[in-house]
Length: 395
Image (cartoon, rainbow, N blue to C red):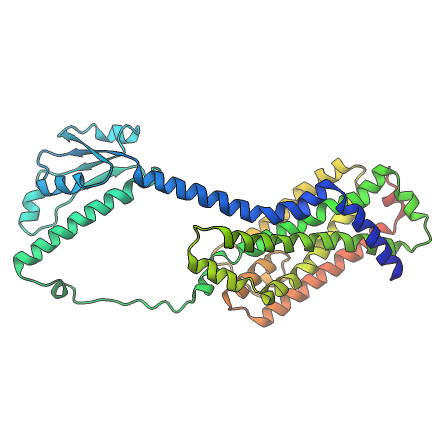
């Protein structure tokens, strides 16, 4: 055990001196979420403010435009109305962005309204243009409400009289459950990626790097058992992956607290979720998963002749890590006995249920069992691969 700790301490010191490892393990996970939340929140606020305040050019087409409708549209802020009469070319102008929208009034609109029938208007717009439909719909809703009030007053009928039924919907799901079901899978997805990336560079450096530096032979000639060398190096690979995930949690927490545009309710509930108990439970699943990752990365790093070759082999494996993680984001995919046995998928789904507070502890035990089993198999494979001289000294 003394030899393992000595090797791990020495390798960890060398690892933290590497700039690429520091970037992947510390800088990126720690700053990613605050930067993302700050940039996205700023861009979203700026975009929405710009969309809601910019001048809209709106065509009003029809042979008879009611004065009430005209006055309602003219009351809109930053709205420039262009009369088209019976000209139907407005569709082309809306499609080419020369006009932001067009409202057409059928000839029988006023007569239908006067005869207590439903008058119909057509609103032409492009849904890709942010804020156009929302602003015009709000104005037309106000006009519709005005006509309804006038009609009820004319008939001497109260609004309650024409509303015989009202359904009060009581959502029994808590905010935590809703966040857990819809975005709970996103949390482990990010941490799983950082676990893999945080373990990847140290694994390459501690094995392929030793080959490039010509020091692997020297290490093997020391009076230390090969299993102790592997254990010391693997412990560093696992530790860097876990540290990367921990820093990602810190970055997520900081991003949520410093992003001023997020709803207070979401920030409060997410803060309640990121409690020590949840973090420890998540880490308890990430540790065997990171050991599993290390058991895959180390043999590849031993096999590769150079840092570049190791990266070219490991990079496609990122896809195999990302794709199962995405499953946790899909609606309708639940934690079952089958999904509890699939690495990466099981953590994403289990964490989603933990966040929602609906976890089945029997299935959670199956998740732990499968993670420990896969971790043990990957470690056994690494031990066997590292034990062969021809693999380590592959020219």
